[in-house]
Length: 82
Image 1 (spheres, rainbow, N blue to C red):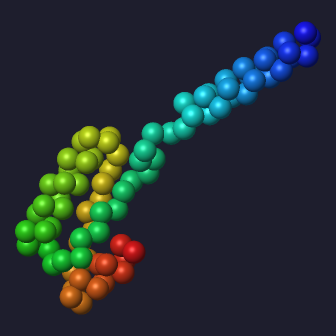
Image 2 (cartoon, one colour):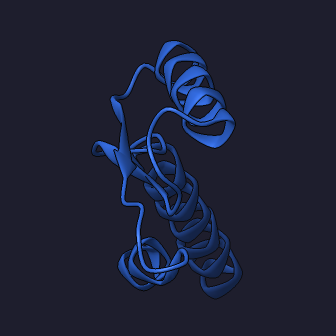
């Protein structure tokens, strides 16, 4: 009987540690986000990217940087994003 009680106590302690670890995780995102746009500034894509970046900053409470990397038929911005 003592063995069964000890096993139940260990299981309860293990579950408590698992759930406490899950609660202690920092919320996403934990650092500023870089939003890369592979098209030239001033176009429709850059305007939409800035609006989306601003809304994500407000919603997440974390800075979203819009990085506009145009040129090279979007190859430069795509390589940076990858």
